[in-house]
Every structure is written in structure tokens, then in C-alpha cells.
Image 1 (cartoon, one colour):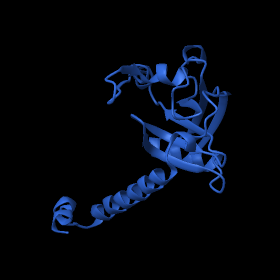
Image 2: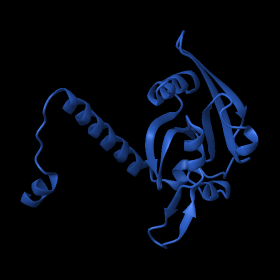
Image 3: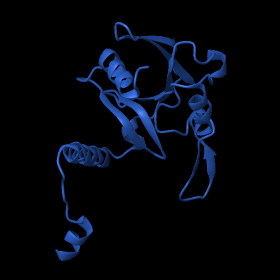
Image 4: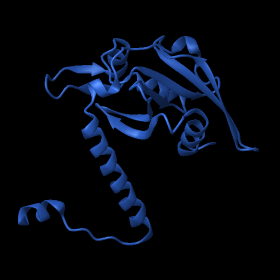
Length: 181
């Protein structure tokens, strides 16, 4: 079975234009994580959620979140379907034939894949285009400067995480360093 990281790599390298799009994986936005987030040059955004099992797919519709300001509880897909969502479009990336398209809400795009374990080829099929949830640019809904700082921090953390796997690293507590200044 293909690992999720291998699937993401195959998808983004066959379907994304890195010169014209910002492509992020495992990116936390709002209250949940996007497996793949693509932002085009005009600020149009598309979240792609990967589901490798039926149970994982079903559980996605049970995800609820609590608005920290109002205390209101809401379901993820209720928020997506009414257009009160960060991204302009949302799709599921699923193994071929895993879920009947009729069971997937109309606002969601459907991308199916077939992975040949013998040749290690992975093919992707667009089953249904996602509906446009709203017209607002990603940059109208998100502060671009904060976004860039967050990405830079994520890169630094990942670099240290990878480096730490190869050698023992000892860091001072950053909160103690700030107190000394």
C-alpha cells in the first residue's frame, strides 16, 4: 500500500505548477489541517483532503470545532458547504472506487487514484470538479505577512526536527532567553 507521503508527492509533482502556485502539505489553517493546500497566483485556494479508508472518510463528516470567540460548535463540512470557509474549493483524494460518488456532498470535488505497486506508477482521475465555495481571495481572508512568517517558522521547525533525528540537539528554553533580554 502506498504511504500518504508518497501519494502527496506523486500528486503535487504531477498536478501542481510550482512556479505559479504555492503548494503546502499538512498545513494548519483555521481549526483543521489541510493535507494539500494549493494557492494560485490570483489567490484562489483549493484544499485537498486525502482519505485512504472508508472509516477515515466517514469520520471527516463528524469533525466538529468550537469557535474560541463565540463558543459556537460547528461541523467542518457544514461550514465548508455554506461558503464560510477559508478555501475557494475543497476536494477529496481517494483510492479508486473506495466511496460511491453519490455519497460525497455536491460541493466537494472528487479525485481518485490508482497505484500500481508493481511499477510504482500512480494515476489520478478527476471524477468531479469542486464547486466554488466563495469568490474571496485567500489573501483577503488571511494576512499574507503572517502567512509568510508562519511558513518560515514551519520550515525552521522541520529543519530542526530532521537534524535532531540524526544527532542529539540541546536547545535553551526560548521563554527563558526572552526573560533575560
